[in-house]
Structures are given as C-alpha cells and as structure tokens.
Length: 375
Ligand SMILES: *Cc1c(COP(=O)(O)O)cnc(C)c1O
Image (tube, rainbow, N blue to C red; front, side, top):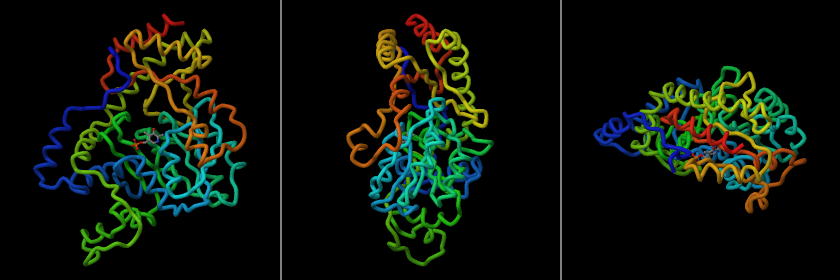
C-alpha cells in the first residue's frame, strides 16, 4: 500500500521516556509514568480521578463493575459501535438494548432513548463516534429522571469537547482508548475517568486485582488483602512512558490531525455539492478531535466499488462497524428496540479515509484525486 489507513502516532521522545522508566528500576504498574499520566489526564479533563488501564475495553469493564451490573440488568447503547461497548456489560450478565442512531453524527439518537427504558434498565452508554459528542444534555436529563448510570464510551474522544467540557467527564464514568489506531497511543491501553469522588476508592481496588494495595502503598492501611472483586487492569510503566511522551505533545498531534481533516473537508466539498457523497457534520456545541474523516456514499454497492478502486491505487480505506444487533453474539445478548431506520443503512454507506499523525498533504491530494476519478 502506498498510503496506509493508519500509522501509530510517534512524536520522537517516546524511547527517552521508556529508557527512563527502565532506569527507574520499576516497570510494573503505577510507577512514575502511570502517575504522571494520571495527573496529566486529571489536569486536562478536570475529572475527579483518572486511572490508566490496559485498554478502553478494560476501562468499560471496570465501569460495569463499579455500577454493580448484574444478570438481568438492561443497558442501553447504540448498535453502531465496537464490540467492547457491549461486551463489558454482557460479561456481568446484562442484556443489551440497542437503539437507533442519528444519521448526521452516527451517534445514539437521544429522542429514541426514553422509550427503550424499562424497570430493568441500569445504565446508558453513549458512544462519542469519531470524537463528536452525543447530545449529552438530553441524555443526562433522561438518565437523571430515571435514576440511571451514564458511562461514556469516549474511546475516540480525547481532546474533544461538548459545550466546553472534555468528553468522558460529562457523566459518571468516561472511558478512553490509547490503542494504536486512536489519536494518542501506548500500543494497547486506555483510561477510566471517574467523575464522582465516591467511586475512586473502589475503582482503585478493582484495578488492583480486588486488593487494597493502593491504600497500603500510601500508608493508609498496614497490610493489604483481598477486599472486593477485581482484575489486573493497570498497565506497565513501559506503556505509560510511551503515552506520556504523546500527552506532552497532545496539542501538536491534535492540530496536525485537524489540518488533515480540514484538507479533506475542503477538497471534497464539490463531490458533496454534486450529490455524490456526504461529509461528516459537527453540531455547533461539539469540538471534535479529528479522530476520523469518513464519507458516506449512496449505497453499499458504490462503497464496495469505491474501496476496490482505492485499493488498486494503493490507498487503504476501511469501513466499520457490522451493527452489533445482527452479529452472532449480539443476537444472543441483545435486542434492538424500535425500528432500525439508520443503523444498518448508514453503516453500509460509510468509508473512513486514511488519517494519521504524519499523513502528508501530497498523499491527501492523491486520495482526493482518486475519489474524483472514481466519481
Ligand atoms: C477503540 C474502541 C474501543 C476499544 O478500545 P481498546 O483500547 O482497543 O480496548 C471501544 N469503543 C470504541 C467506540 C472504540 O473506538
């Protein structure tokens, strides 16, 4: 491929920090770099407590445990999302209730939400697709009225905001991903943002295999022991050091990506005016982070033909997601509430273009040219 779909972000200082982590003589979790990342995330977002995790998947699992999700509980979320959004709750025995998305942002349709609530509903999980926020004021008001937890899947959302507030800080819990396909990376990794102080102590315990080791290290208890359910959700210092290098340069990465987004957006305007594609739309209360640039074409047939045209030119473009409610496991553990008006039809039309830190303008020009050739 001449132009890959993604390249893992690399700013150049990662190896220096990793070296420092090794020289510190402590490469397990919660050393200098884990703590530095926590502090950075707390300062940036304003959350009560940020904890690095081994993935966003694991941050979601922690949130499910913190909400005491039990067999029979129902969790509402969009079907147009990554499997981990649902898996975290299915692992605790919950049923997933999928609701339709809005075609403009591909986010959970807040007007369909209230009708899906039953006496078993425990939580709502909005996914901020492409780093563009869901209509959170409406979602939070509905959650409050019905006494439900809200957990933001903000895997794609770091450095994006809704009405000036960082994604992941609008609800009870926010979950970030630092997978290598995301804007900021540590290979595999993530973070749990805890927005209510009451949950901090238990979150630390769950993350440390169900032990009170964090309190022990702070000298708050004189021995540590098994006090709750938990697992091993803390990443190694090596990964945290890699991430820390990127957090320091987060604005540079953001600006670079925003420029790439802007380039596609400007240069593909004519195709939209000709009625051949649609570009992403960003509601005015949302600041996005250029996690993704996608276009939508008129049908799945056009998409298949366009993807093969791009592949032949050495450009790797991709699509996602197979809606969860039609997946083999989604059918067992979930149900779709109401009509699937947009989830399937809109996901069938979507194509993601190459976008990564370091993508060159001449490559973007080439992508635009090949899109124009096709149409
Ligand atoms: C990437 C992603 C995840 C999973 O993140 P990992 O860090 O790979 O576990 C979950 N939800 C969404 C919406 C994602 O994009």
